[in-house]
Image (cartoon, rainbow, N blue to C red):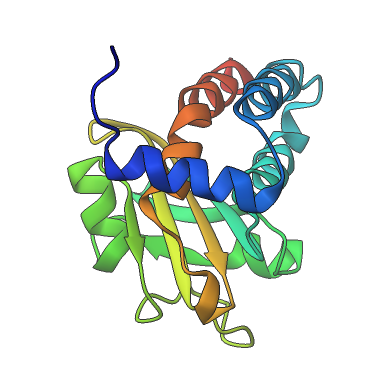
Length: 178
């Protein structure tokens, strides 16, 4: 006999029901997504692939992949909301604010509208997931995903969805660097 469901399982099931997908669909989606990540033949397109997958995975409006520089900063490798030149020129300190806290703790967070990624002044984001890819000592990148609609704020089940593919994203980034 199964034990009682926890609240995140109930929320996950409710989200699936609202989206019209089944648990089998999410498994298929995960397998297809993993193949998309690991089959990336052009390493320079991998940041865009990761951003596109993140948006699809949680129904986000904006997403950015930040990668570390040699001088302990992050640059925006790809963003669906910024021009490439503006994204690459943006530098974010690894030890400041929400990103610094997330990177230091190596723990993802859901944050509200008090968090604004540099360069996104034209677009208001009501809710974001800031997800470190790697560990505090070996950070490969930070994924920032946002929703503009205050009625669609991220919930723990969204964070769990990103968590499902985070290791694959990290592996793809590591493979691309080699």
